Image 1 (tube, rainbow, N blue to C red):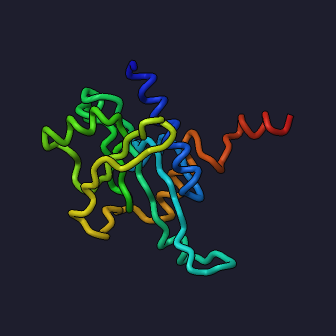
Image 2 (tube, one colour):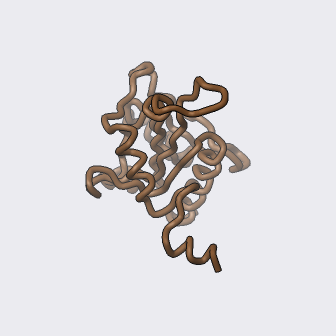
Length: 169
């Protein structure tokens, strides 16, 4: 598989996972005024109420960051290792995950997820998040992250002006 195909295939599996696990998700989310980018961010509000939502549900929600890496060169490129969410995932092929593990360079605080054998879902290959316990690495507020998600190029809930015009035709 070439690098573009691998990235697209892994990204499609991330979209599928986020559609099943997050209330709202977005792709290519820029943080820090465009200085940092995350491949995918998912958001799931904390909902202790059965029939409604409150501000605390948003503030205590969980932000999941996903970085997709197609090969070792991509991993070592110096771009796209933004693991500052409540949950952080490195998405890659099994071979790359095994190579990173054998070289001892798996990122701390991250779950490494890979496609299953049938390439129908993502499964955990390595869990390096236990070093932090339940502690979140998130430094951004919920409102800032949600705003950045809304401004992202693609999301599962927000459509751009051009897309909205197409929908009305």
